Image (cartoon, rainbow, N blue to C red; front, side, top):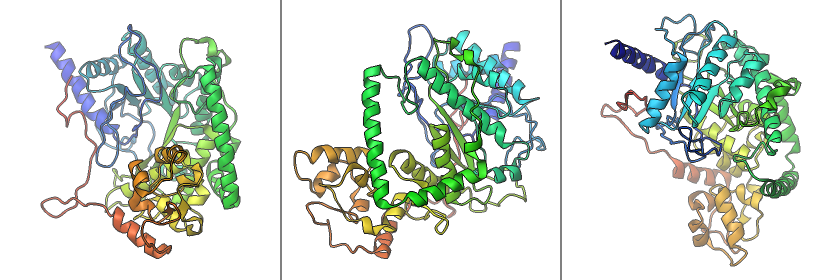
Length: 502
């Protein structure tokens, strides 16, 4: 009877703490290449993370839980804030380990995402997370992917210890600006967020240097020969991209956006905090091998998309993050000081920010190109790349058979893979529209901006209003309605909804 009672109690905790974790975003692959070793359980290879997405794009592939929903802070946006009357529960380190192993053995999950409220103090909470991960890696021999949320304000020593036990660590920025943080999360301060981010960045560099891998951008650990060949290619690509930016005369816009990003948080003033210098005494493990990420809430305060993307760009440049995640604000507390969301969370805005984020990371765009102080928000009806293109029609049409790689990337409907395919294929033959369609080009977007052999696909007017109307028509969402006429909304699926038990 005692065993049944304990199992029931753990399931109650799981129901509460998995639901409480649904606002933490973790929709990434593992980002590391550690395979199975034949001794420990699981692996964290790049293909080792299963993905299940809800309709709004949130990932539920990991066992995503809070260690506890107790919290000493009173952030206005958080369901677990100290002033809320909610049922408070906490796992023990052993319970988290057993849940992870049992779900893994049943093939429900491939990894663990572990966050927590703050109980007693940041150091005490971070110590509990470290104890959990230490048991999971040593006693339970779990070799799979682990993403842990760092607790702002925890000491550098405990952050370092956790960094050697996890694959990815993230310290949430929470709000896009420091002023927004003061408004809705008065217990959290700028330095307690930025200092551990800097420590993780430096720790990753030191660890990879010790192991002979100097690239912060590499998702897998490469041997020296491959690495240096890749480094030369990256350097050449950056030179070409810089030349492209110079041709477009966007230097001033970029500087303005950088100033906007730096103004709120003052990233350049963050000291070069590092872990202990004996950190490299752990030669068998990398420090945070999958890199670090962060998350910010969108729509809780009044920042524009331009401010958000400027801060994002500064984060990538200053802290070398793998990802910045955006979480649409949900007023779960019905707090009168926060915006009401009568139409639901701003999921479309969140989606546009993710699209723009990809343009920054993979397409060579700058925040100052996509938006400006005069044009501070993205168009709700067309994606950011299309919005940029229709506002810069002087750069089009582009001849597919002659344009360089970064020029092709600026064309709506042409992605990184299709651009590379075009560059390779046109060495052997002149390409037409049927050819590039087979290569993955989305012609319903691209046809307004390209020529093949000097000709456009149709006799299309190069006019902003004309092209915008057609792009909106092509991209209009297919709305789904419930029987009573309301539009369907999406909620994150939990393991309980799927009928899964341990």
